[in-house]
Length: 171
Image 1 (cartoon, rainbow, N blue to C red):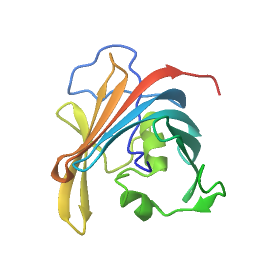
Image 2: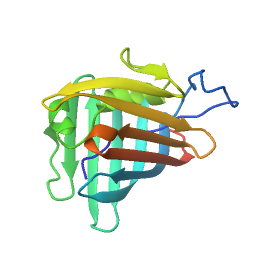
Image 3: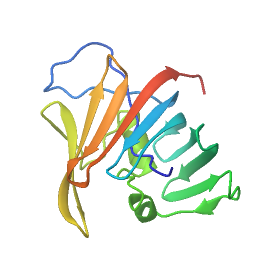
Image 4: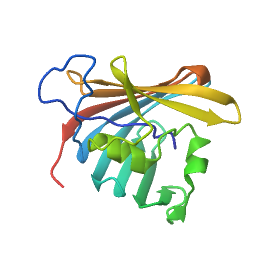
């Protein structure tokens, strides 16, 4: 349920594949589908982040009646859920153990059009080299403007996260 990999953005007009899209989604609702070798899940998402360094996301799984909330301010990340309702600090490394390969601050920056320095536009998508105890691998992020869908792929780990934006909302 902690798998919150990535979220999406918008385009004003179709752009060629060699031009990165300019995303701007500070507030939205949508769906996040996570596909891993051992599990698949889909949750509802509510996202609020006016600035990359401060935000809130709520994930709701109707099947299990689980709600997870994550908030961040600068480097501090806190988490709570309906089983443990007290806010508790969590490190970005702990999130990575659950498949979250972009910290919420980085995802917020991407969704606000402020790309993290190590995301590079290559062949119609953003790419980042990841290095961990399993070695080096490639994270690929693609945006489909027509479907308002952001897809993150970690092919070596067999993981994929698909964020579909259903609607934007006022702050």
